[in-house]
Length: 163
Image 1 (cartoon, rainbow, N blue to C red):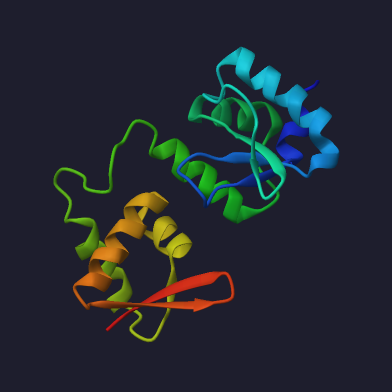
Image 2: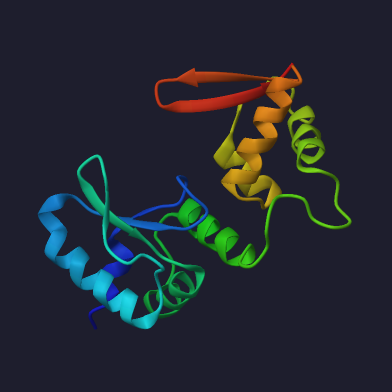
């Protein structure tokens, strides 16, 4: 089946609230084929392939992600499975604030206070709180502005710690 190689592509979950299928330019023919299939089934909202640092990619919507996981099975990586589960859980939910739950900043602080010496990545906080990257990043920027959290950068990795 043509879709089975799709699960082997490089999925990126952190750059947005939707998974991206990213390939090197040498695999452009296969990626274009996958894109046409996904587009025909309504599994992407992109009109064409985009590029990031010369690498072609497109985003899957949650319908596409759910269907592909259903036919291809889970990822080998447990972390990717958790990201996929989070994206599917959050389908149709807007923003980090949820009725009846504390604001995102408070929820983040509660988690981080349990481990006061730990520096947290956005990814860790997302999975722990079951919120998307946009919600967590916005909350962390607000906490930093209020001088309640510090941002640390080590290479490409950004971590946060409460003050």
